[in-house]
Amino acid sequence: MDLPALNAFLIDNKYPAFRARQITKNYYSGRYISFDQMTDLPKVLRDQLIANFDLLSVTPIQTYDSLHTQKTVLQLVDGLKIETVLMDYDGWLTACISSQVGCALGCTFCATGKMGLKRNLTTSEIIDQIIYWNTKLYPKYIGRVVFMGMGEPFMNWDNVFAAIKHINDKDGLNIGQRKISISTAGLADKIIDFANLNTQINLAVSLHSADQISRAQLMPIARKFDLETLKKACEIYTRKTNRQLFFEYALIRDKNDTQSHLNDIIEFMGNNRLFFLNIIPLNPIPNGLPPSNQQTLSLWEQQLSRHHVNFSFRRTFGQNIAAACGQLATTN
Ligand code: SF4
Image (cartoon, rainbow, N blue to C red):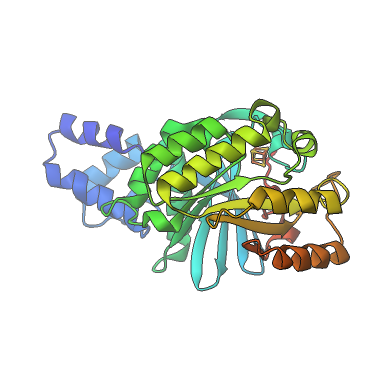
């Protein structure tokens, strides 16, 4: 919901200040899907709110269910669509949310990248993805948020961090900073800016290769920020924040999973105890690149262990409903 517009409306219509607090609290509670259900408000005010505001700036169009995962296509006020994912495992309800409609960065393994960028999401559209899930889950609620849906969060910096302020605020969604994660394709300058914010928010970097040539083939952004520049920024981040930094690596057959790629990643991880590598099997997309085979996964596991790299093989859910990393896309 557009809270600044709501506040202005209430002031213009001479409502007492506590009404704004009351409506804001109701909105963040995830308990209501329409103003009409807010029976703690006078009927005349409820009618005015219905006439002038959308409680949520996103409207569910379609939901897909899978083991531990649900995906919903949400329509925005201008008719564009985004996807948002709920993950329910390890005792946590996690929302994987989008920050843009589409994405400009065009990673070759990613369905969102194939859409191009339509526009940035507004602060409300980012927050409302979480509130949408809370309305479905009530009285349970989202405990963790990951910016790993559609888009590059650092390319929508102002709206993403304005949204995070409300997601984290105790009078907002009250989700601790350590329960929020941002994933970037590797915008080195923004990684340094992010380090300077001095937050407790987790950072993940989509690496996908520690060899400049193959990384640039998979992720065109690597031509702007080469591996050396990216690694320097990551080292500045860990030095400044003393926080772990997660590198995402989707294993793609013959593109980034050979012995030489394995040697490169072992060298890249070096002895930085705050670098952590998440290996994920590539999630297939239509006409997309092929994932690595099981034999390769086992070989990587053995060699990474032998070289004492901090790593894990991440489980992945939701592939069958195209809700896993890199699979989100809408036809707008
Ligand atoms: S992987 Fe992320 S940065 Fe790359 S195209 Fe997809 S959404 Fe954009």
